[in-house]
Image (tube, rainbow, N blue to C red; front, side):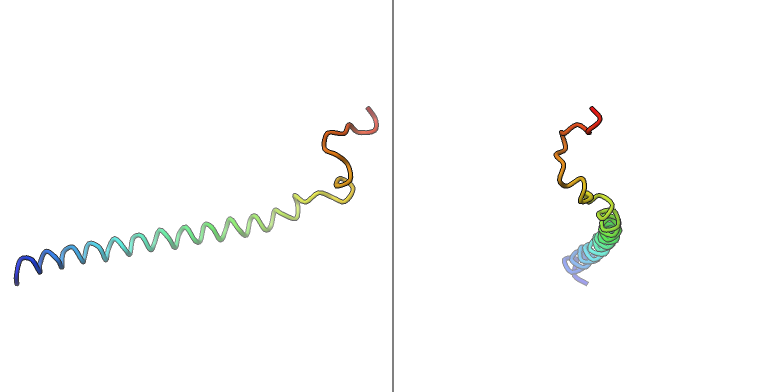
Length: 65
């Protein structure tokens, strides 16, 4: 076979492997992002202020001061 074709086939094989590796990284990152989003959704209801606290300014001292 012609050397140029052999070289092109080598490069193509390398690029195909590289694309597969990048795809694995993307899939792993998407899984991590999904886990983070689930955790954020789970934690958000806990961090919302209660209606009692919503009316009071954050810098106001409690009544016993």
